[in-house]
Image (cartoon, rainbow, N blue to C red):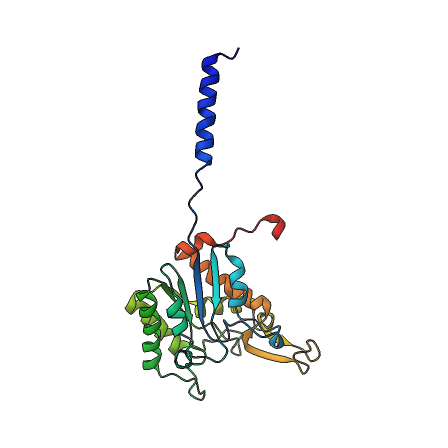
Length: 258
């Protein structure tokens, strides 16, 4: 039998439930993740398909509180990225809690390219990216240049960024910056695939396979859709390992979405 006392208690309990429901859970602040780098990270024009920068699939992994601004561009080095005025707009729009993922080296390290950057200038430019990001209370992350597909005669992957990868590591240590060693980890991935199968990670096409490359393509630098996704996954795994707050915003894929 329900007594009047029971009814009063029930009403009080119900009132407390409605009161708690009236308070919304605190919302996460929206943040922006800026990607600055070269063609291995950049968004591509339709005419370049299926060539894919790893920054293209990267933004799909985050929830609605994260905006990914991919400012990477083909052929750019740290020097040309700054000289062309591509860095300053990033600084101007940074807010506290934003992230800046910095991956250069491919074009900086080649003396025959117009984009060549001396080791001293490369260091200075990386320090500029880091210090100016921090001045806006954003979080800079240094990333070593992603691996090219190059094997020796025994089928072992070869390092092609040794000097400039080490420069990135030196700056990370000097300025106490979070580091993602994409060079090393992407080499491991390519090695796992092996000399022939690893072509699926890069923009390899037979003649007539794709209308954008009627004569075919053998590209050991730029990625296929598969390769770009794999490289993005390496970066995401490191974001989790570094225990960034950003890791809490990575989407959980439900079974029906797979």
